[in-house]
Image 1 (tube, rainbow, N blue to C red):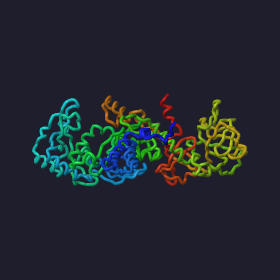
Image 2: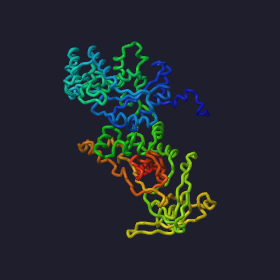
Image 3: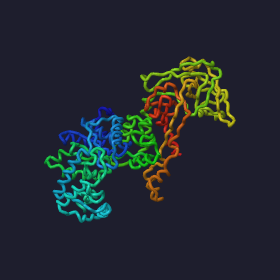
Image 4: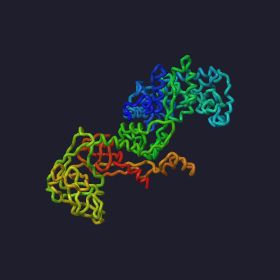
Length: 581
């Protein structure tokens, strides 16, 4: 059987995704002089979400793999929705994911070139000013099987269109009163060819150009030309742009005047979006969640934004690993959120420091342990990484243990703390429960046990087998902390479709529909938790495994006297099991 690392060339190529194969073929054929240049072109109208991470990995990954460059270009052609805050957040997210762009560009860098190009199209009879309303233009578009109707302004004189175009940008024309349309083919089977709008009036200050422009290019008009101006070779985007590709190519044909167009031009290729169940990723809907206070900002750990995943404790490596697992195809699919969590679990298992934390404490008193005595026990930081070393955890007579780890009347196969049964306290001793104490309501307040001094971890007597191992904290050697337990934000598997169905059935707005399917138990804050004093020096975003509970990280709300931890993911996938019942 052939070894994997000795596969023949034909079999090696099968492991490439289809975009990699295209790039390799283009390089082999010498297109664009054997260069590869990509770009990541976000609109700065919100924070990046997990779906953008897939595009980032593709755009930057292709450039890295094939010795090219990936530039960052902000598609800032709609000043009403864009902000410098989003620009800076996007740059931070890209760096956090582990990528660095070659150059930083903006579509607004090309406003003058795009304006000059539009003037040229008017003079060549390829564009005209249309004074119809948006509704009238839409009604004349026709259908995929029925040709559209030409605008009454389609053949207006060139000089008239030129003069009106200047007025669109001078501030003399109100928004919605006129647009510039490309004159292509109102009978084309491709709806995007039916005289698309390429400029409209927007009277809103731009975050970079201020009030210089009043007429702004549309995305379809700015995108391909910006790629061309920058020297992009491979314009990689998601599948919804497949029908836009002929228009992309046409505008590039129009702007490019040299004869070597076929070998020196940007080429658009499309791949599938990242879709996750129990997740809503439309920036428009995410903005509603933030503005209406249904979440606590863009970085609320229940959000699908990259800054939210970072705050929740996801590592950039785990996100990249997940994207690599699901791959790139030419068809859309709905991925399991649990697959993302498994990638996170796998990664954090390798990097997280193990610590003890008690989220629902009940006191455990070792009655035969000397009062006032304190022992220092060694705790391994990470059994997966011997170089991670160890730290000290104190053991004493009075401990905190998890309430769920004790049961007064336990079934036969209960292997935790119960009267008459032995368990091991991790890194310490074997103890036998002798009873408990309750308050007037029957709630357990204290559990009692006796220890065997010959069973300390590492001693010969420690080899005695018991079926349960529990974690604990010394009451006088731990810190109080706030712990935030997060769950799915939505109760339904496909919130996008469910929102549409609710809105249609009830004729309500999206906010009202959201309130019907949002998970009321998506956040549970526990204020009376205890953690090792070792965590006093922990920094925001540090990764930890709370032993026997799950993976947690330090929230940036943490202060010197108030520790805050976010639950990243459990040790096992309990969500899938619950929903399978």
